[in-house]
Length: 210
Image (cartoon, rainbow, N blue to C red; front, side, top):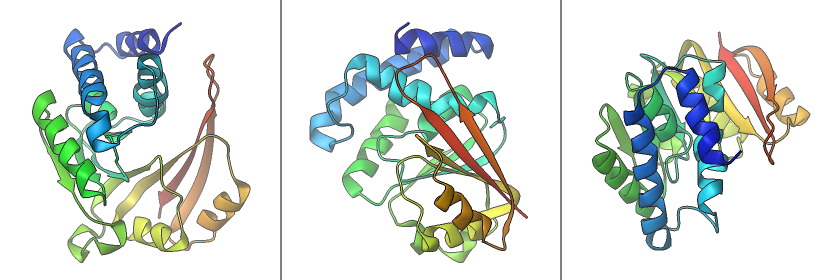
């Protein structure tokens, strides 16, 4: 099964309409058209865009409901995983945090072209977010950033009580789990490893703030 079919099946199971699937098709076209200019993804085929980016981004939705949540996508890059999740959860308030200005320009174009609402693009580093964002987010998504002690501390500052830090991993690093678990703000560590009949592995570290 190709990545596109995995996503189509997923959308069907979630009882989502065809409009959301059409948005993914437009998303793919923009990625392929603008990749060279904005350096968004590296040598990915169309099939890999659908599998390793689109479908991979939304896998977590099998375990968590993103409806009516405030979500920060840290290191958003080309919009993964935040934008694919936003497409299938329109009520989600999404904040895309990206420190590279060139990529924030693409994200703004993407939001405009896909006609997505309640999205804010922030061109900054997470450690520079001001105190107005403390205790602000329900969910913090991390897919392509290594979480240093500084980043982890900031993550729990900006999460609300009972908010969740979700780190996308190919494999679980026990040292990283121990580091998160050592933080006083962290209430629980929940490890989820999702095994799919696809040629890549995906695991999640989910940490809930006290």
